[in-house]
Length: 232
Image (cartoon, rainbow, N blue to C red; front, side, top):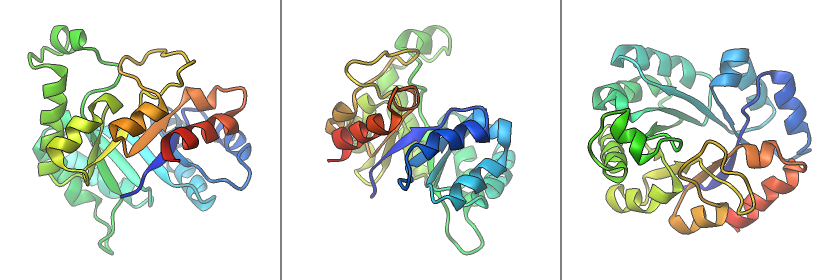
């Protein structure tokens, strides 16, 4: 099972993305393409970055009726991305349909992971707005267990939840964790956050890092700081 630092390329255009990545020279970081960039540029940006040698986590958080998700996964899988996600809240039926759709004609497929609860969601919001009476911890664990039963490879979760998810679902069930900030950084709109070193301690398999790298005065140094703290 691999471990890596994934840079969240939350930009609005291909030109902005490529300008950012050119700073890394011959280094080809694992990158996340989210809704903003994908909706702006479509599959072209995925193909462009694949040609350049980047691994890609396509972060579109699919959440729809099972048949729609199944057909969409078939299209997205054909882009040869390395990881795709969907919302576990879409139910086991939706996740099972996604796994049917994601398999390519040669039998290969990207990793498929499910979002349990967004790292911007607090316990209070879970209860008062989403009307979920269970604790955040129990909700995340239940969603992770549903994802595993549906055949998914892992979940997106807070680093704070990596250890308990591995205890419940096994060490081969991967945890992909956003909500990463340096000790001297701003938490911004994230609620459940850790540092790269803490994420490593807690058992995260992949960390997704956006603004601490992309908005740094020296993005390459910030990336290497993450690599050192998380992987070394």
